[in-house]
Image 1 (tube, helix red, strand yellow):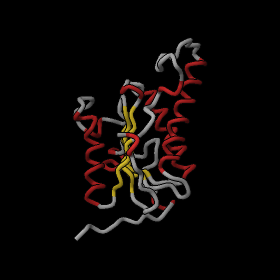
Image 2 (cartoon, rainbow, N blue to C red):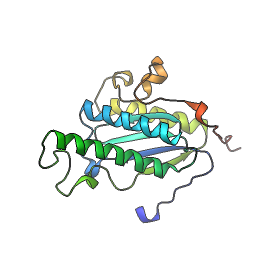
Image 3 (cartoon, rainbow, N blue to C red):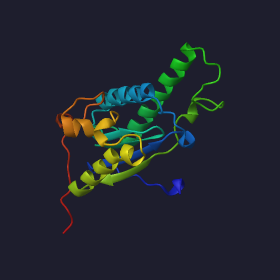
Image 4 (cartoon, rainbow, N blue to C red):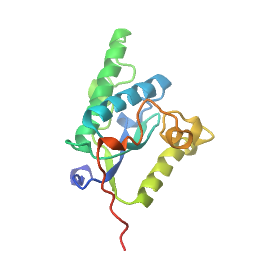
Length: 184
């Protein structure tokens, strides 16, 4: 239950985060929206000085594997990412003269994203790899592409092809990470 959700910050762990669009709607269903989200994600990455170890943007949700930011928490980062994207989408639709936001419910901008996000601490190399594989295979599993390198809204291309995308992956020089050794 959401009320019992506990977050564990401060140990220097990576965080596997899943964030869904409101009502699991395909609000990220167009290339333009996915590109916009990645632009916002990069701006927030720079602002909060965190490392993105992996990501994938799906039509109705995102997965991120991130470090803790230098000074704030992953919750602050997620709030900034959600708000930054929502404001840009609303401004874009207002410029286009859309009376009732086409991607939103009539009740307003608070309904682009679900209120909460799922956060799982990743402290072993095995779990890091497992989460990256899960993220990168998600578009294939959903039938969006035939192989992971064909989905350009994923960190897979950075890993497999060395391709720089809109969001910088594995920029470790911004901080020092502490990865726990496997339990004996």
